[in-house]
Image 1: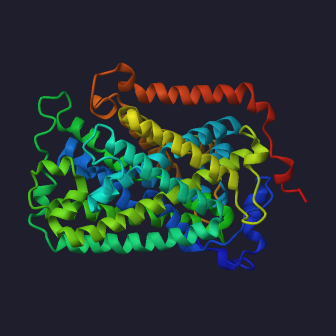
Image 2 (image 1 turned 90 degrees about the horizontal axis):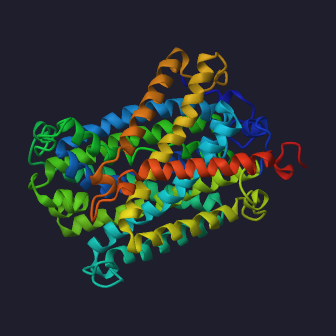
Image 3 (image 1 turned 90 degrees about the vertical axis):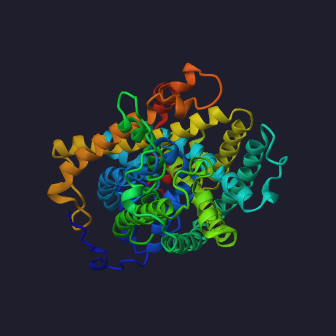
Length: 515
């Protein structure tokens, strides 16, 4: 594997010179977005989408509940699989660092129909993910201070759900305003938030390490006896628990989706993708491991209910613990910013190809802020509407958010699978002098496809504990992944095939030859 930085060999490298727009014009688009982002900004976008503090604090309880402390092994397992995908993306990011990365990559590798379906799945999933991340405020803020429970006292049947919608709506409104005011403002806030998140994450690792009470051999082999008597034994329990890791480690492609607003993106985007994923793996893995090694009682029931918030408060005390929880709030905030930013670029990319209704409106770039404002508003409104479902139907919302992650994995598959076909046909050639996997490209691509297919199936498997955890059992909830994804994919594609397909084509005002 080689990553040869040749940006400095080109005239005007890194200064926003015309070569930064080569990949945009090569795809037939006129460069319109403002290039202001540097290397750290793109790295910050990728790492804030993954958002280790958000993901680990939101899902730690799930992993322990279904896999015991030994669920930790799913973290390196998911990392290795996602690394194979990320390496394929790096080659594509070096050659096509454009807005709506997954959509444009799927289109270039598999053709316009595959590209549309991949973009549609990714866009739908991104809007649901926006709502799901915004809900994390409810998991953290009331634990810092009961004052943040604005609806009731938290004991009512719908108090927590209604309060979650309120807090999440405020957060989405803030993210919408920031994203609408231009990428530079978003990048500054996002980078500052990521800096705080990284400092807090390292600090948390150090504090937890100082309170270790048991060795890793105890933690990494404790299964709580889960899976006994089941057909697959602990392996079945482990596969369920692995969803806690799979739900976190994705979104690294955001570093490339901002490629049209970055300096020297062909060189910086692949590096940002890898750095974001590797940093998230190392930091998140150590937080999870040291939390399990430091918690006073490894058998405490609160581990599978209160999650990592319980561990921090119980281990570090209320004062220090609350400081770290405030940092988690910052991480959730910038994660929502990054998720919405990625969704905006994706919607803009599809709209300028006239692949969405009202494409000319959605693809309009604000002359003042040099960013697509309408997609920011549309995604924000849809995110709030999805949140409202959570008030009286939390079980349905849980199903939808779980399915959103599967749709992102499937969208990734719509890039890596046609890319593998192009490799086997001898049609894929990385840009000369830029990031290249060399002779390792084919085996890595094969592993990326196998991993994506296997994890998508694991995520979608009709487990009652995931898709029908509480209340009466319903077959449509158990099979919700297959039903919902089938409806979204088939319904959406039917609309595209019979209506939008006949209108597809780069809008005149966005073409490379436009004045």
